[in-house]
Amino acid sequence: MNEVLLIDSLKRLCYTIVSSSDKLIFYSAFPPQRWHGTGMVQTVTEPDLRYRPLRRERMRCVVALALDGTPLTVPLEIICGAADGPRLAVIAGVHGDELEGVRAVQTVSTVIDQQRLNGTVLLIPVANMAAFTARMRRSPLDGVDLNRVFPGRPDGTISERLAYLMVQTLLADATLVVSLHGLGALGMLLPWMEFVDTPGPVGQASRAAALAFGFPDLMPLPLLPGVLIAALAQRGIPAIEGEIGGMGMIDPANWRRYVTGVMQVMRHLRMIADPPVYVAEPRYWELRWVHAPAGGLFERQFAPGDRVICGEELGTIIDPFGEPIDSIVAPCDGVAGACQMVASVHPGDPVALVWSPSQPRHV
Ligand SMILES: [Zn+2]
Image 1 (cartoon, rainbow, N blue to C red):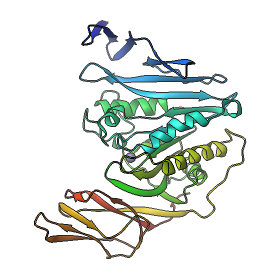
Image 2: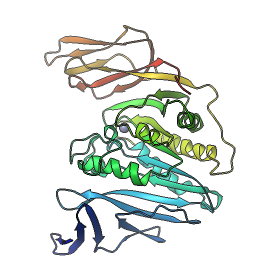
Image 3: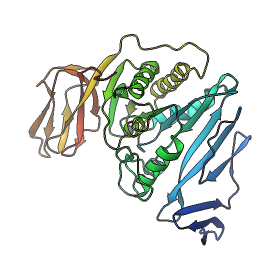
Image 4: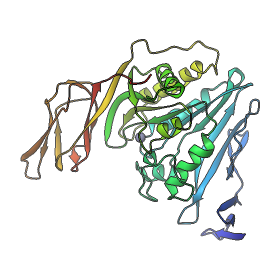
């Protein structure tokens, strides 16, 4: 057992850390932060996520100690209804520069009426706090894209440990997981919802949740390695992943659609008594990204929502002397679903996305 006292620049005791072999026990010497004047935000290593009638609690869950000695934590809120029931987890900020989901999760916390709620809602507004702080997609602590390393490793890099904590502890008992994304700081996309397209009850429950969420454009996905919803599906947990907005903004027109979608999913799970509503005429697509063949200025000739045909020119790459050096064409017929808005592009940047008509294979 080793005990370490960390002292900050004002010579205050910050943390007491007790470690024994691979187990880390963490205490904060600071008084817990208050919220709403009704509770405390505790920093914990082993979060208590059990149902208790009308429980509402916020906490920060320790992932690991970072290089600077401070703990990387995941903020989470547990909201329990008057009766026990399904467990819905809603996550945002897996990528640190996708912010509309973050604002949506924060708002869901304010609109849930616990007296009318059956079951438990677990909210994680910012899953990847290091990437969020750096305003980046990836964690600056290890350069890892969190949504490529699920289910993670207990002895891996700090992002892999975060992924492991999420799958093994925070989300392990979920009835359904909803993960909210966007297009980061450089681009903009039309809303869509992804679900795991696998045979059997997990795929069926994922598709049903996607139809309940309310976005008419749906992407059936196979079990992609490292992606959260695939790692959950492999553990028997249905999961969906939404996309909306971008440009590092929190546009109310976008995040309110996410809030509405989460509440619709709660109806679908019978967590609130209002009858569920489902997308009547879903459109199924697969994603075809187009990458810049060269660096330069991208003179875009389309906008999200445009219909495009295979081979149609979507834009031109211009070199520093103003000469056009390459063009970008649509790889298939479909709808332009996203684009890079910032005109300066690196070789290989994903500059356009075409939605190609598709159908679920298994559900
Ligand atoms: Zn994302």
